[in-house]
Amino acid sequence: MRGAGHHCLILLLLSSAFLSVAALEEDVTDTLFDNLLEPLRDPQKAIRAAQVRFSLRRPSDPSDDVCYVVTGRPDSLSSCNFNATSKTFLVIHGWTVTGLFESWVGKLVAALYKREPSANVIVVDWLSSAQNHYTVAAQNTKVVGENVAHFISWMQNTTGLSLENLHLIGYSLGAHVAGFAGSHLSNKVGRITGLDPAGPVFEGAHAHRRLSPDDAQFVDVLHTFTRGSLGLSIGIQQPVGHVDIYPNGGSFQPGCNFRGALEKIANFGIFAISDAVKCEHERSVHLFIDSLLNKQESSRAYSCGSSEMFDRGICLSCRKNRCNTVGYGISKIRKAHSAKMFTKTGASMPFRVYHYQLKIHFLSAVNHSELQPTLTVSLFGTTGSAEHLQLNIKEKISTNRTSSFLLVTQKDIGELLMIKFKWEDSSSWSSSSLLKALSTWWSDDSAPSADMQVHRIRAKVGETQKKVVFCLKTPNSPSLAEEVTFVKCKDHWKSPSKRSGEKKH
Ligand SMILES: *[C@@H]1O[C@H](CO)[C@@H](O)[C@H](O)[C@H]1NC(C)=O
Ligand SMILES: *[C@@H]1O[C@H](CO)[C@@H](O)[C@H](O)[C@H]1NC(C)=O
Ligand SMILES: *[C@@H]1O[C@H](CO)[C@@H](O)[C@H](O)[C@H]1NC(C)=O
Ligand SMILES: *[C@@H]1O[C@H](CO)[C@@H](O)[C@H](O)[C@H]1NC(C)=O
Image (cartoon, rainbow, N blue to C red; front, side):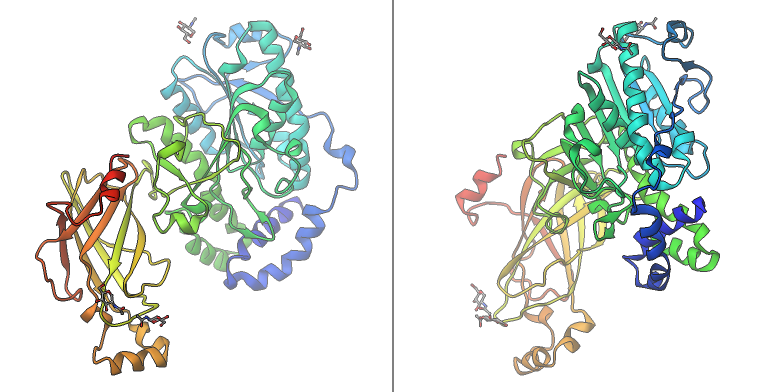
């Protein structure tokens, strides 16, 4: 029964985005609302004494529990080699179906020791309270958090450790455990990192009943699975920290092959579903591990009003703390209003990509509007190239207007030197509207590529904050039907002085 509830919850949340499983959604909707969101009939059941254990893991043995620190027993600290002057990490897992640690726990512990060799990495084991009906497990986060707070308070009294040196890292429901722990301490811990904090039960809840910026001196959050409907998603959608980063918009993580997983579900039934969910939900953990292991290749995230705006490349600014480092090396910036930050990632570690904004002004004597061509770009830099990248067209292209695009490369191509650009009319274009097709016919041009021109491309690189203007290599290139080459403009006499002023930033 408990297992079925779990699968139903996940199914509903996933299926809302996919019509292919819409039929299943109907079947599970009632079950979900019965089982998940209805208040518990017996609240006392949830507040049964939580069994919480604190395993101080060893760098040589990051996946095994060999030594437990026990509240009230100071000798357990010394026998586990607790170092009171070092940083202390508390790793807090989430909901569990199996009652076992997932494999990411050992990987995260190993990565923390690699980055901070003298640290104490303690794994908070609340598996027995987390292996439950989701609603029960979610309600248990409060009492488990109180338990963790009591442990921290005891350690502080016993060893004199500084709360500043304490960093709680919680995944899914574990993020809310960390929040409750932080809010029950009389002084704030240094940092809480929420790795895709759980959404159901917590979305829209009062700040006291979920992870919030009040719970630590600094709270940072990675959101990787915020796809859903009616405010219901596996990961919480709303910002809950000082800095909230939504990699890939907080949904559809590259390499997770969500559709492939859905096909598997169609073939093998709902028990194949946990793999599909886990990949995107757990991506938050692997992005954090990446940031610990690949210090030199940290990803950068940028403040933006929306994921859609970010996808048009218009948010790559670092002025006034608008950008930050993803993961462990984040700058502890506390703004009055929590702003969403966005980044793109690759499909595997290291996840870092380079973000480029391309601003392209399309000129034509013919009045075209609402075009959706296929635009292909190749970038050539001092240390490499990234070729045949398709531009993601987020707003339709029209004559005599500037369009902005976001382009990412996983490869470091060095300083950008040359851009090749190609326009291909999409076949659906001519059939999309009879009127448009007619007007094109009357205008004596079969395709927009024949008369559309681009004279300059303005590029901005998020990672270096450099702006460069590219001009046609051979002036008077007749049409975009063939690949056109742009090189750095030799002089800037064409650019308004205001633009060259901006370049200094
Ligand atoms: C404790 O950690 C500090 C660094 O944080 C280090 O200098 C010291 O040697 C460590 N003590 C022991 C006993 O390992
Ligand atoms: C730690 O010390 C404070 C102040 O003396 C006290 O209020 C608190 O209960 C102690 N915590 C534990 C777990 O003993
Ligand atoms: C677009 O701008 C160019 C140059 O400013 C002009 O010659 C052309 O007529 C304009 N096209 C349209 C459709 O207005
Ligand atoms: C071009 O077409 C759009 C709508 O298709 C129209 O709003 C606009 O005024 C036209 N511009 C010119 C210069 O004809």
